[in-house]
Length: 115
Length: 115
Image (cartoon, rainbow over all chains, first blue to last red; front, side, top):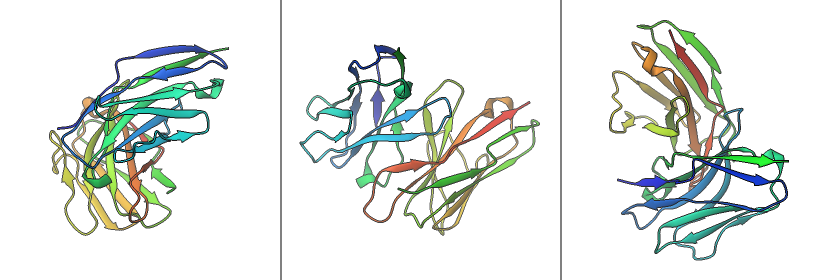
């Protein structure tokens, strides 16, 4: 069975500052993928960033980057230059089966942006 | 990325009745999935909707309660049967992209309230 753990129920950051959201996971798969999703109050799930486990290079998407530590099974999300629009629930997720399986989600982190 | 729509966006239903939720993707996709998000909780995978064959259900979810159809590569339905107040949740469908793509894109969700 796969598990995803997000140990920070809520985080707060000042606008324009940097914040890091933590995620650890466990899987017996050798071929798996990791994701961060954002869910604003509209409830639409938005894909923020993705990481293939076989890639050593950390993924980056504009202000969003990850720190993927495969041996430690850690997958943290760094948001730089935080903006008010970043306020949302952030979910870490994992899929195995070469990407053909459904996602296993963590419990989420509620990110608050202080103006 | 795939664009996904769901109908209805929300509904209020009486206990003991059934509701069918539709999920439409704007392009042919390999995999489609259904998730449940209970109030204030994370997403839980209900089943994988297989085209042309029976859905694959996760532990704790059964076909009699959540029958799923997938008649083609762009459409799926989820029925919530014999509803009780405990079924009040947001139901989301997702899809992967074309062959070789592994990231999942989500529909806007259906908010179901059972009274």
